[in-house]
Image 1 (spheres, rainbow, N blue to C red):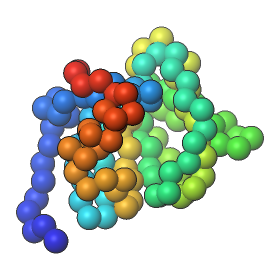
Image 2 (image 1 turned 180 degrees about the vertical axis):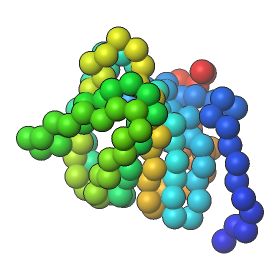
Image 3 (image 1 turned 90 degrees about the vertical axis):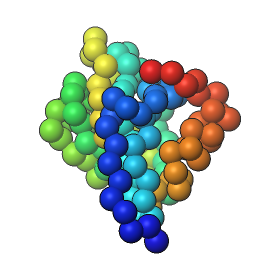
Length: 128
């Protein structure tokens, strides 16, 4: 187990263009993973599930989150807990990007490099 503090600045992390927007992998520990996600205006992602528990924390904009037959809107300063294996989709109906922090426990991968490699295999593009 690592015994050092990790610090990352969003602006210093390379972004990866994915089907969900531009992901910036911030921090991955043994029990938690944190990713910054910028969701472009008009983007819609179909409901899908992850095996880990997650939190979506909205930093800016307004985001629709769809789960089963329920749709809720979260905006700046709102956090949402998504239990493991619960399918959720997202829609940015606005005219500007929405930014969120995704927190996963346990983390989906062990490092930012592992996430980048996984996303690049799926067709993500490095850049922003």
